[in-house]
Structures are given as C-alpha cells and as structure tokens.
View 1 (cartoon, rainbow, N blue to C red):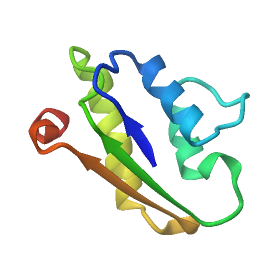
View 2: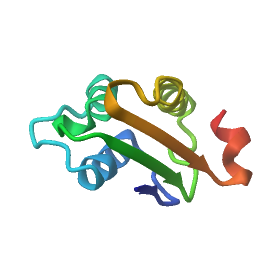
View 3: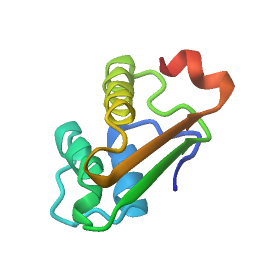
View 4: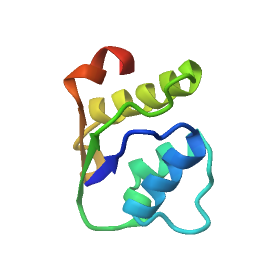
Length: 101
C-alpha cells in the first residue's frame, strides 16, 4: 500500500513516495508520464499486482494544475483497473474528496 501523508506539497515529493513504496527502478523518470507508466506496469514487476493508494492528506494543496493532473492519472488507472494483471484502489479521506475531485 502507498500511503500519502499530509503535507506533501510538491510533485517531486509525491513521486518520491511512490518510487520508494512501489520500488520503481532507479532509472524511472520524475515526470507525470513516467509516473503513470510505472504505475501501469507496476514498476516492471511481472507478477499480478494490486496497488492500493491511501491518502491520509490531500497532496499538492496550492498547486491546482498539478493536483488536477495527479487526480486525472488516478481516475484513469482506476477506470482501467484489472487490465494487464494490475488492479488499483484509491482511497481519500472524506474531508479531502471534494478538494481532490
């Protein structure tokens, strides 16, 4: 499970959390396209995966464009859940749902 703690203010911080928790390869890029590709391929792991993402706080507060991009990537992943052997579950605190939509 990936836990996004309160206080994640930058894309770089957010992507580092995912890279650490999901053990992305060191060569993985630090941009939105690379992030989505790593999630869609489970960082290159061959076995089926279930990726659960728990937001204990809303990331990227004060950066609406970055937050919108992040949320769109998560929506797309959930919509495609189960394809290619990877399923996704994305959880938000009730108090943050409106901010993240």
